[in-house]
Length: 301
Image (cartoon, rainbow, N blue to C red):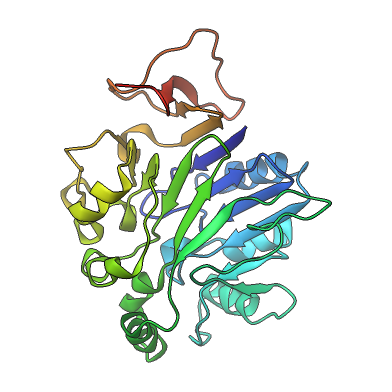
């Protein structure tokens, strides 16, 4: 069993994965003031039994870094994963913390397509891996190098397009994809360079905005069972009407309790759906989210 949580952090992203091994992964950080203490306390609590904690930064943008300095002060980030870049310090505390961690050779690990690392996606005699795989970037790809150069030359909007594509798979269970804030036109440009797996759950790029809409031929290849749409103003969102979706503007916190062959879905607020089946005897989580239904991954339609 593993737990995937998407925190409700307004116009930003923050996730964790409590793996079914001795691993705990945090993806991005957006510690909005009204939820900051609760989020930090929860992370401290749920990671305490895990030996390996990693922080994965999809890209250096404020709504994915807010509170990083405080988070580091509370949990001591020792494994910091990001796409290699040379953006420089500015006068913003959390951005500077990003640069500090990125440049610390004892803590940094640069992620790229098909990279491997002990306990990220390699097991050994002592510990099972977390089954986290990086599908993108190809650091030799010209389109990626152009975006990276723009970012390093001060065009901060290009930060979105250095986002990695991250896959997490549970043995005999869920496969999940994250795209960071990758934009639709850039994804269209590189799609033929990526081998997309079948995936049960997708966290829509750029919080589900139209600017990050996943092209239809990619969705046809992935065949997602659920697309999770993040928090942004409704007029900017693409609701992926041909797919079953969970919209975080409505549900707020989302928890996926993943086991062999199924996902139990818990959310902070109720939402209407016809794609989840109900199991009895499910209780409210200690963090407050309530059971909304179960997705069976291998069920014949």
